[in-house]
Amino acid sequence: MQRVQPDIWETEMESPFPGLTVHAYLLTRDGGNVLFYNTGHQHEIDEMAELGGVAYQYLSHQDELGETLKTIHQRFGAKLGGHRAERDEFARYRTPDILFERREMHLGSVEVIPTPGHSPGSTCFLVHSPHGKRYLFTGDTLYRGKKSDWHAGFIPGHNDEKDREQLAESLRLLRELEPDVVFGSAFVGDRGFEETTPEDWKRHVDGALGRLLG
Image (cartoon, rainbow, N blue to C red; front, side):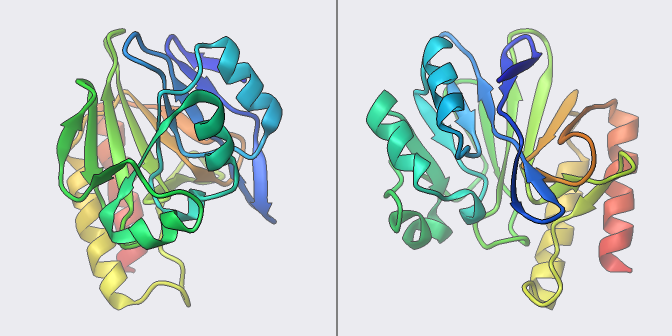
């Protein structure tokens, strides 16, 4: 793992499909560390133990499910969070301890923001760090491209027009946030996160919306 922010650690890259790469991110905090997304690397789970373990694991959507959910729970007793719309999919691996379906604050500093479109239960998380920054975890609702641009997670042949409309609304919601650092789950290119300004973020989301809506 490597530290990418004072309280954020990034796992080693994985490539579940050709051309697609992913990271997970560990938020270290006094009230118990939070793992966003998932990793299949056992050695990264070992390193998480050295950083204080995992008290909570929040998944942005069902594509992040995997056998290591059980490993992380068995090793650390981590509570699993996911959207109610994907509860059945989660239960094939592990039934969530925490279900969400609306925008709300968790753990005192993690804002849960449902953003359907890529999948029915896609959810983003806005973390208010005590280090003075706002971290936005977008899952696959928005992912970073090769040219430091951001793209909507719409997959032709998998998503339909209703999904496109939902995703567009989700992007309009995210546009109004003012993150300092944005962390996708899947990405294309050299890295999956980017520091940004409110003006640049609006420009990124506007570009993603334009490509999504044609």
